[in-house]
Structures are given as C-alpha cells and as structure tokens.
Image: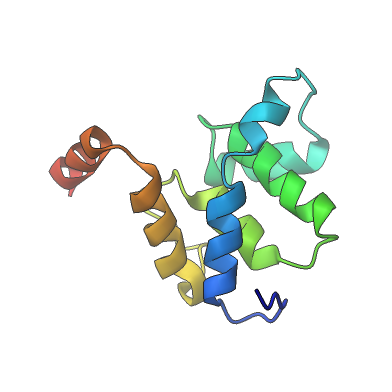
Length: 114
C-alpha cells in the first residue's frame, strides 16, 4: 500500500480509516481521560461517541500527524447528517465508512430520517 499524506483524499485514506475507526474503543476502556484537544473537538463531531476521539488520537500519534484526512474521516463517521465543517474533499469517504460501519437496523433508521 502506497501511503501518502497529500490533501486530496485517496482510497488509502479510506482504507486506513476503515482499519482504525473503532480502535479507540479499546483505549476508551482503559479509563484514560480525554485530552484538552479531544474535548475541543468533541462537540463538533461526536458528543455521544467518545471512542471516535480516542481513535483519531491513535491515528494522529501513531502516524505522527501524517494523515489528517484519515483522522477526520474517523471523527465524523457516526455523525449524520454531516455538518458543513466536513469538507467536500472527503465527504464521500466519510459516508462510505458510515454506511459500512452501521448495522442493517441503523441503516433503516437513517432512511426514515431523510
């Protein structure tokens, strides 16, 4: 896999996001508190799903800030409808991960909300 850090979303960004989008569930269960940076981001992306913050931090720290798009795809994959702060550049990747991650029951709920 050729990993790069350009600002244009690539299939590699979606692949990394898919692999690590829920890794934060493990970190969350350790009881480690959220950082101040996590708390600043929380309201815009995931007030109910704090594991997203841990997953994004994992990506940021393990890959030394080389994949901000992957981090953002992970942060927003539980939020529907997507806010305007989610760039059109990677909105489609967020939607793909969102749909791949939810159960059939959740998909039915989302269809009813539209």
